[in-house]
Figure 1 (cartoon, rainbow, N blue to C red):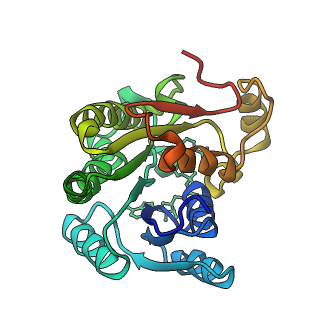
Figure 2: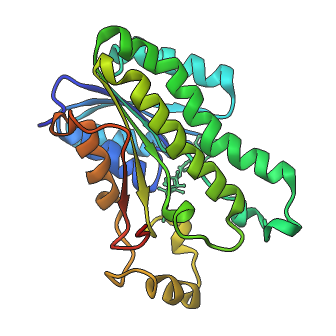
Length: 250
Ligand SMILES: NC(=O)c1ccc[n+]([C@@H]2O[C@H](COP(=O)([O-])OP(=O)(O)OC[C@H]3O[C@@H](n4cnc5c(N)ncnc54)[C@H](O)[C@@H]3O)[C@@H](O)[C@H]2O)c1
């Protein structure tokens, strides 16, 4: 029960990595506000409640700044000041048909940067000043091995995720004196709805780049996120933990 008495705001909580993170945070005693653009976030909340945990669901597009500010205020009104902020929303333009950089559309980059980087900065801008004033906070931002291991067609995503790590490191040193830690987790290939769409040949090619030889589970990433969110990690800040079965060595 590492999070007994603690509150968290977790975005992208309807699915995959952040859903698993929200379920475990609540199972370990914390109250969690689950944010997502999909109504399926209510399924995450229902699952937490049926396990005896406490959670609320909030449907919004995190790139809508006014909606984000209103939702974060509502979450704090319902649960109290935020101890843990997990910024989980991110995606590339590949799913929308984005190609290699020389054929790419700047509007797609803008969207990917907005979803993956700007929303992380915006949520932090709203929540971290309160953490700093209270002298306690844990921020965990989700990056990706994509910026460590170049993959064709992922220029916009790699730029956004490298930005997430750069942002994490600067915010960490700015807030270190105030009891706030800021870290990133960079997943390798993980079994989620997005990667479930990989055709067998893609899957085989990707698996060949993973020293452990298989995709990870959302819970594997959730475990790293929640270690950084716990008091066991109180002297760790400005770090990026790669959860990739050995993929993404620098
Ligand atoms: N799955 C992987 O292999 C992998 C690898 C590296 C990094 N990541 C990163 O991990 C994070 C979580 O990914 P996942 O694989 O669990 O994804 P997922 O597709 O399972 O879940 C992502 C969630 O984000 C929500 N979302 C998307 N756009 C949103 C918006 N504008 N506002 C609010 N919610 C929005 C979706 O509705 C979805 O529920 C992402 O930042 C992703 O880039 C994933």
